[in-house]
Image (cartoon, rainbow, N blue to C red; front, side):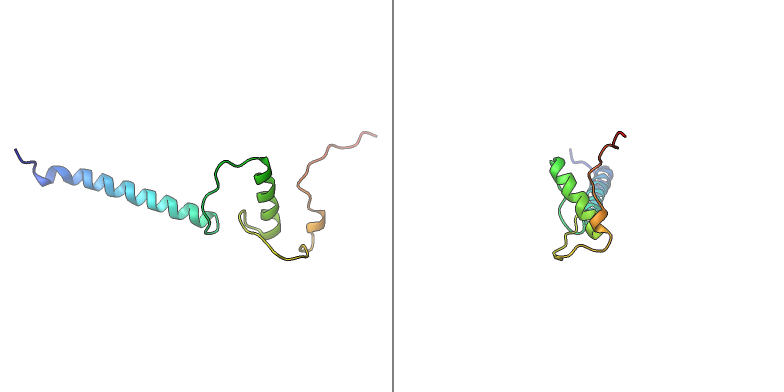
Length: 86
């Protein structure tokens, strides 16, 4: 007994919507990471380096090869220290 093709239209629509959503999310994540692939399994060192790159270049995944840091970066320390007791 053949299945009428009209019964398969909703399945095709759902499949197309899943494909469009997956492609859109992939493109958005690629754009959000500056055109680079998403990072996985980040440890504390990776987070510190990514935070430094964000402070240095303005983007989370951007890197700079300039030998001299921009103005104001010499006092921009990511490490939080406790206040001295006096």
